Structures are given as structure tokens and as C-alpha cells.
Length: 378
Picture 1 (cartoon, helix red, strand yellow):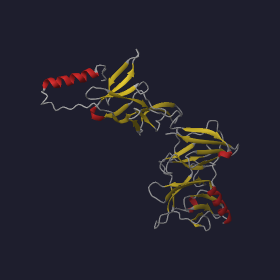
Picture 2 (picture 1 turned 45 degrees about the vertical axis):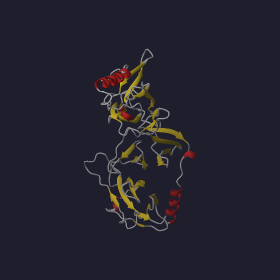
Picture 3 (picture 1 turned 90 degrees about the vertical axis):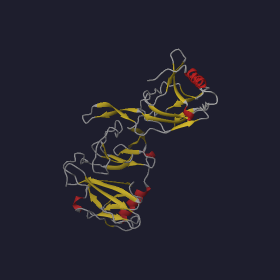
Picture 4 (picture 1 turned 135 degrees about the vertical axis):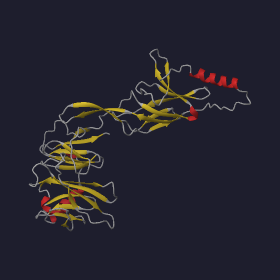
């Protein structure tokens, strides 16, 4: 338990006196340091109270633990301890376990302001929580009791809501442009193909007028039928959407998803994936149909106006049912989440979605030309 230590210095001095009485000056080899400082400050346990929504739509608060406590800076010259990477806004700063180490085994003390204006000092313990909203200062006393060093501790948190979409309305003039898409569109038209599907780092894809999935590896100058692992009749025919992103498992590789609808399935979208490798001596890549297993209840529902984007390190699908579907396993399962929501007041089922290099998600209501820009603060 925490103990009040207003007599800390007297106790340290008493310990010194007892030592001198028990041993002669020739026998006393104990060394006491008058120099100390905080040399390590970490948050060991920080609780978060996150709002969640059940399948029935009921809201509740779930207690979680911050999984990646941030790094703290110790400024010895200014006697400051602070974090530059802010914590999420839903962190509980009144009940925090901290790990604090000192130089030369100095005694760490928590100073809370007392109601009478005096200092209220408590021994630090790694198993006792600290109220950082109330903390006045952190002290570390030297071994010889000659003095202490004090620190002002600041724990920065985000003022905006974290782990949830934050939207702001923008204009069409703010919308990022895709110059590469314009080039590919022109090349697809020049080749007489039906429509552009999308493009990755080094390859572009289009549907031919005969329904074949075509690939170009020279910026659209030439096109050939791409390789498939299944019957081409399972390719989507309507509401086509495509996304490509760098595959973390391999260098010079893209992970790509192609989704859409067809008469082959009345309840779910058709989903294909391709791991496109560009490194020298790589094996030829091909499109693989992701089967809809009977036990998989988290499929991407069949809908119109589908958009695919790679946002916040996950694939998202947005369509005419006004929901955002998240796939954390590269296209196998798709789930809605209270974390990913559309802007309030958006009732359109005719949207286009894209992302930019700064990590924002952009939405355009194609019926009204209204534009929103969204992000998530972790």
C-alpha cells in the first residue's frame, strides 16, 4: 500500500546515523550517493473505455488495455517528462500503472496536492496506480537524503475521438486527382477494350469486349489475356471494383482484389485476388477465385455501385447499402464495424471512394457532388 512519507529525509538521515553507530569508521564501506535522477519512465498499464455497438445496434462501453504504450522523453535539463505521440482520447489517466527507474537507487515519490495546500507525498510502487490527472510532480530523493530532483509529468492525449471515423466536408476542388488513371483510361480506349478495371505498381487490367480479363505490363501499349485459376465465367460482370496495395510479405509485390456482381450468385459479390510479383525471376502470377464457403457468414453482400479502397491498412468495400465493409484477411471475410462509419447525414447510395497519399479516405456523392474527407486517429 502507499505510505505517506513526509518524514522521508529524517528516516534516511536516521539510517545513516545507525550505520555509523554500529560500525567503526574503519569498517564502514557503505557508500551513499547524493546524485540521482529518473532514468526510465514507461506506462505499464493504461485502461481504455471504448464505445462498441452490438449487432442489434445497442451501444455499450467496453474496457480495454492500451496495447502499445507510447515512448516518453525525459528532459533532465528542464526536469520534464512527456510523450510526443499522444494517447487515444478514451484512456483513463486516473488509474495508471507506471514503471519508473532511478539513478543510484534513488527513492521515487509521488506528490499530490493536499487540500490544505501542502505537499502530500507517497512512496512510488509499480503495483499501485497513479492518478496523472491529479499529480503535482514526481520526485526522486538521493540515497544520502541531502535533496531531491523534481519532474513535471505531462501525458498528452488526443482531443479528437480516436478509433472512429472523423469526417469533414470538402469541395470537388479539394478532391485528389489520379493522373495515372487518366493515362490508363486513354490506353484502354485506344486498345478498343470494354473498360478499365484498375492498375497496380507495374500492371494494368481491363475487360475486353469478349469478357476476357486483360493485362498490360507496358503502360497499356499491349494487352494479353491474364491467367485465371478458375472458369472465366465466374468473373464479375457488373458493379466492378478493384484495389491494389503493396504486399508486406514480399518486396516488389502487389496484393490485388477484384470484386463485382454476376448471375452466378444471388446474395454475394464475386471476389478474386491476385498476388502480382514483379521481381526478377518471379513466377507468373494469376487470379484466384475466393470461394464462398457455406460456413462463411461474413461474405460481401451483393449490391450496386461498389467501391474498393485500401485504408488504414485494411481493404474496405463501400456500396449502395450505405455501409462500410472491412476485410482483415485480404478479401476472404467482410464485416461491418462501429469503427468505420459514413458521414452523418449521408443518405446517398451512389458514391465514389478513393484514398490519397496522406492516408485520408475521400467520398463523393455523385448525385449532389458533395465531398467528404475522413480519417481515423489511432
